[in-house]
Structures are given as C-alpha cells and as structure tokens.
Image 1: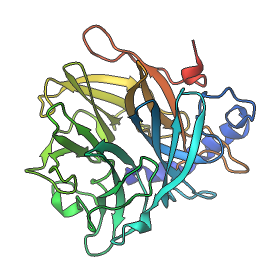
Image 2: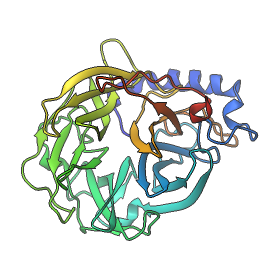
Image 3: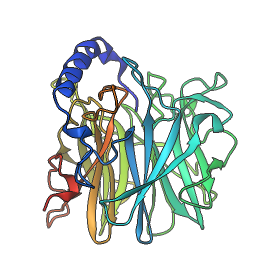
Length: 336
C-alpha cells in the first residue's frame, strides 16, 4: 500500500488526469459486465490481492480502500472473497479491523493468509502505536479461511526497529508467506529493501536472522511462490530514473535462500495507478496473476491513489520456467 512519499509533489496532476480519464470512461462500472472480467469486484474499492487455494475454492484477501475525495489512503479493515470457477465470487465481509490489533493505530495495508497446522494464519502491515513508531507486521489466526481472525501474538511480529538499514518508517510492509516442501515457512516483506526470514513452527516468531535479498528496482509488494524446482520472487518494481508508476518484475532461484536471478518485467503499470501488487497461485490446473489498477468508479467516486480495484489475468510459463509477460486486460480470465 504504501508509498514513496518523495513522489507526492507529482500527485495532484496525476490525480486530475486520472479522474478526467475515468469521468469519460464508464465501462469499469457497467452493471452488465461479464462475470469474471476486470475489475473483479465493482461495488467497493479493493487493493493488494492475496489468493489462497483451499480444496476446490480460491479465497482472495484484499485491502479495502475507503478514501474520500482527494484522500490518499484510508484503509481500516481487510475483506475476503471466494470463488469456485474464477467467474462468480462470494463476498464474506470484513475478516478483521486494524483496531483488532490493540497495539496498532491505523492502516490496514497489504496482507496474505496461508494454511498450516489446521489453522489459517493472516499476516498484515499496519501502523504501530508510539511504543514502536513506524510500520509493523501483525499476525492473526483463525480456524476458518473466512474468519473470524484474532491477534495470534498480542504484539507485532516485525517492527521498524528490527530492520534498521532503511531510512524511512514504512519499510516493514507487504508481507508474503510461503511454506516450502520441507514444511518450513518463510516470510518476506519490505519497501525499497526486501527482507526474508524463517518463521518458527508456532508461526508467530522469527526463527534466526533477517536477511536482505533486495532485487533490482524493488519497491514493495513481494510475493513468493514455487513451481517445479524453481522459486519465484515477484514484486512491485520502480526504475526511479525513467518511470513514475510501478510495474511488476520478478527474480528466480534454485532455493528459497537464493541466489536470486533477476528476470525482468512481468507486467506494465496498472491503469491510472502508480501502485501495483502481485499475487500468484495455481487453481484447478491453471496459473493466475492477481493485480490492481484504478479504473473503477463506484457511485460518485472515481479511481485514484486511495481507490483501487483488483484484477486477475492468466499466467503462463516458458519451457525454461520463466514467466511469459502478462498484458493487463478488461476481459481478464474471461478471454479465450
């Protein structure tokens, strides 16, 4: 969620251009849109999608943008949806509010949920209270993928003081969690710097050192997954010398601990959005890439910095394991 505040000076012009474009484009809000086309959800603003497959169902955890007028980010809770066919989605409501973490004071930012030991573990970025200033990563737990989730630790899993290299207070955001074939679970996160650490079997403590694995142009939003013998680190990237909007890039490795090889860009920027956030999963034999853009209009509110919309596209691989570039579309998974 997030963000590189040094770009704030450019935002007013960006907002005006985006809102003008959205005013003349009503397709995103059309009530007769094909089920499964992009954006996936059209009745509220959503961002930072994180898929989880449980049996024959795909659950999608999203942030909830509630910014009004020219607000940047106003996010107070997390939502979850589910589907069995990638076309029709069920809404399960909020699974948690940021205030459910008593030590956090605001900002229900990017999250991911995984299943382990018969429970569902939810990791999310929040703003810590003044006892540990800056962004932090929380962990919650539930017996069901749709909640209710409760604070699993009673304190932050990761605080800003645990990663002192960063020069800004929001580097500890956007957690991604991944369980390897040996049962070990890893967590990666970051803004400008990308960190990785092993989790203890209890899922609420770091086990060992925190390591930096920052790939080229890393900005935020890392996502870990594995296909075959290859590990993937996909993330929101920004070449500050040439671009103002994030794209999606990725690296691969023969082990979760590297070495990581940069593979280049996977997608362009999300339309009308300078942020983007990848989420990848395999579901019923097909691979999918979830993203967000800012093309949705809901009522009298157009897409903007704090009002984004989740999308999904098919994801394909080359014989050598690299991912084929993905073009973001309105049709999404409804395309042939």
